[in-house]
Structures are given as C-alpha cells and as structure tokens.
Image 1 (cartoon, rainbow over the protein chains, first blue to last red):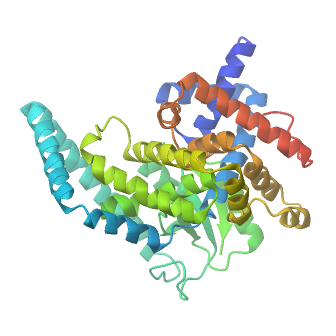
Image 2 (cartoon, each protein chain N blue to C red):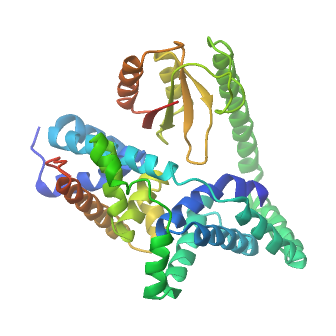
Image 3 (tube, rainbow over the protein chains, first blue to last red):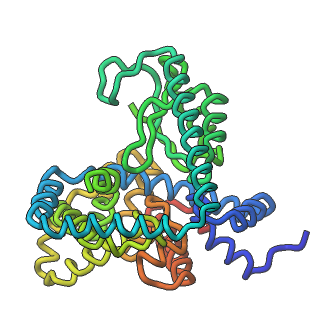
Length: 222
Length: 166
C-alpha cells in the first residue's frame, strides 16, 4: 500500500474530530476508519481526540441548567402576544398542509409505511430495554436520586452512528443495562449487572467500553 | 413550544453560557432565543435540524450581547461569572489528573476556539452544520477546528502533558 502523502494526512487529520463524534457521512467515515487502521500516527491522534471529546462533554455537563426564571420569562412574553400566536399556529398548519399536498400518492404511501415501520421498531427497542432492565439483579426507581438504586454506574453517550442493534449488542456483551436517561446532553446512566462491582473492575469495564465504536463518551459515576 | 423548550433549552443554555460566561445573561438569552423561535416558526424551512437553527439564533444573540458590553462591564461580569469547573488549579495540582488538566485547558481556549470545539464534540454538529451556525465556509470550519486543537495541545504541553501529536 502506498504511503500517505502529507496533504492526504492533513485532510484526514482535519476530519478526525468529526469521525470521533460520529458526524461524518458514510463515505468519509469509512475513509477515516481505513486510514486509522493503517497509520499508527493517525490512530494516536484519534485517541487524543477521544480524550478531548470526553473532556468537552464532561465540562459541558457540569454547567447545569437554566433556572425556572428563563421559562417563566419566555411564557410570560408569549402570553403577552396572543394574537400573534394564533396567526403563527395557522401558518404552521398551512405549511404542513401545503407540504403534504405537494407529495404524490405514491410518496405518501411509502412515507406511511416507513413511519409505521419506525413506530414498530421503536416499540421493539423500548420493550427490549424495559425487559433488560426488569431482568437485572437490582430494583431501579424512577430517578438517579432514588435511595433504592444499587450497583456500579457509569455515564455514557452513544455515537450518533450507533444503531439500536449496536447498542443492544454492547449492553448484552458487557452485561450492563440502561438505568436512566437520556439527559439533555444525550447522556445515559449505565448500570452493571454485577451488584457491588469493585472499583477496579468498573474502571476496566469502562476502559473496555471506551474502545467500542458505539460509544462516544463514558465516565464513572455514583 | 413547551415540548421544543423542554427538549432543547439546556443545550442552548450551555452553548450561550460558554460564550457569555454569565448565568443571568445566559438565562435571558435562552428566553429571547425561544421567543424568537416562537415568533419566526413559520420561517423555519426544515432544511437543517431544529437544534442547528436554535444554536444559530443563540449565537447571534450572544454575540450581539457581548458587543453591547463595554470593556469595563466585561471585566466586572467576568469576575462575577460562574466558576468554570475547568478553572480550579488546586484541583489540577492536587489530583495530577490528566483529565482535569485537559478540562482546565479547554476552559482557557479563546471564545472562538471554545465555540467550535463545543459545537463539534458536545453538540455533535457536522462540518456543514457548524458552517451554518457560525456563518463561515466549510473549509474554514475544518481549519479553525485544527487550530483550536493545536492551541489545546500547546496549553496541555505548558501544563506538562506532552502528546507529541495533535
């Protein structure tokens, strides 16, 4: 195989952050994946980028949320403009009607079939997650602050390219389940099926999960 | 609007907070962004994701707010700004934690570099979406990200974390 030119390397290096975040298109994704596999320097750079990505997610997740004041102010302002609301609602309804009217019957039929398939798929995934949760060794209450939650936990964000199948496989292979989430940042709380997992074992599990392409961020949590 | 707000307000808040570095200002901006969205709902053409549209509006409003401030106000507000979790040197010194050093250095980047790193890593925006939000060509997006990472590597090196590559 021909060695990579400087220009090609620079182009690929520039794409690495988006590759790590999973936001490249399929062609570029494959191109970068192949380059990382054959170039140790790019592979090292990719590892550094994964650290940066994890640090950035962690930093943003610690910024908190706006107080209820922001929402109160917003809806007070909206309430002060009742006439505009009605007009805008009508606008949106008209736009949706116009969009649907512009589709051919065949397109609409395919869209309906696709929508039905997505709903069935979602139902399957949700059922799978729920069944997975209920078969776990511990009882999970509704929130992370619940006193009844026990076990070893980690915060995880899945790569945007991860499919439901990838995630289900990851959960099963590593004997973990989704305990809570997602939060606003797309973060889930992951629970090990082994209650009272020693800290070292949890750290090993997290390191193992970090290498999974379906994971864009993972860190231990209480 | 409630659903839209519930789904996106935290991300919009964190994005503008990283730009204006003041909680009260960031909260005001969140209200303004969603009020604008409510007023302009009919203009959303669906060519981009809703979150991309929201972040573009939020960025414009945050920069307008920053421009309105005088130098003195900026200093005062910076002093009153939230304590950046990445800015605690004692934490870094005590723990010698590589990740803590990384977070500290991320907090030291310029607003321009911080913005692009947040958009790519945290908000998971593609090259095209970042270009749309920031209003720059796609080539410039890649170059700016490259130099943001280069600066980060320099800051890490100054803290004793050598990586030898970008």
